Amino acid sequence: MTTLYVLDVPENTAVVKIADEDPEVTVGRRGWYFEISSAGSIVVDRRATGCRHAVWYSCVAGVGRDGRITQHDKNALRVDPV
Amino acid sequence: MTEQDHRVRGVDHVAFPTFDPAATVRFYRDVLGFPVVHSICAAGWGPENHPDFIHFFFDIGNDDRIAFFYYFGATPQVGGPVGEKGDVYARFGADVPEYFVRSRHLAIHVDSEDDLLEYRRRLDASSWPVEMQIQHETIESIYTHDPNGYMFEITRAMRPVTPQEDDDAALTIDALLDVVAGPEPTFGKLLARKAELIVERVPV
Image 1: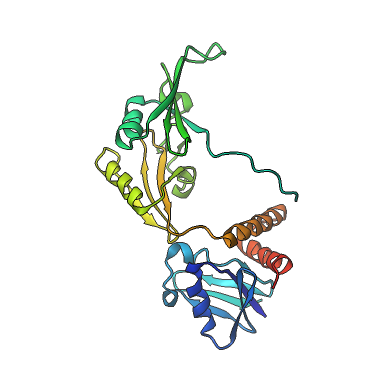
Image 2 (image 1 turned 90 degrees about the horizontal axis):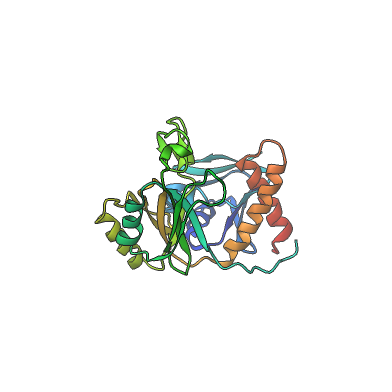
């Protein structure tokens, strides 16, 4: 299970929304955090989020040990199962 | 960890040396309009080799102050060889990366876009125009270098800080302390440790 945590602040909501468009991905809550999980990979397209530099590169609050960020660049954020 | 009383009340003053008091006064008092609020004229200061000096202060709002030391007879070489990068206090060789040279800076707060743009107008009409105006999405800042080479930022918040950001910061720091206590800290290890702390401490 791949799990990505994103803090619930206004500028992060687009990241969560785009991640949630993948039917394999489930978005839940843990307190102030969105808990985004998937049996496989989680992929977020940066352009679809509309995020610019500062928010995009600081939107990740945590990654569960079963997953690892394999891409976080101007195109996409990708978390793959370990 | 026990919560302790938080009794401090902001910045009393932050102090820097200057070798150009005339330009420093022009920049802070005349261009930006920061009032001169205090000065100390001292004949030496104890040790034999301590030069006579003027320590002068500008109000940066909120009764906080930025202060300078001007040492009579001292030249910039007193701090070592003049470098290719940096400011009059910290000089660096050409090979030192910009992110490091720029890391230490002072940012002064304003309440609104109007106020930010007013300081932009004052700087742009001076010998020290704004070098960058950047919206970091949650804050907006203008930057220039003062006459001493010190990086100078004025910033406004584009939205109030939320309580969850304070809670998140506390988790980040605890995760960071755990990761730097171990071998070869990385950003990936920090995010993994932080995810564990979220699961441990944040109620579902």
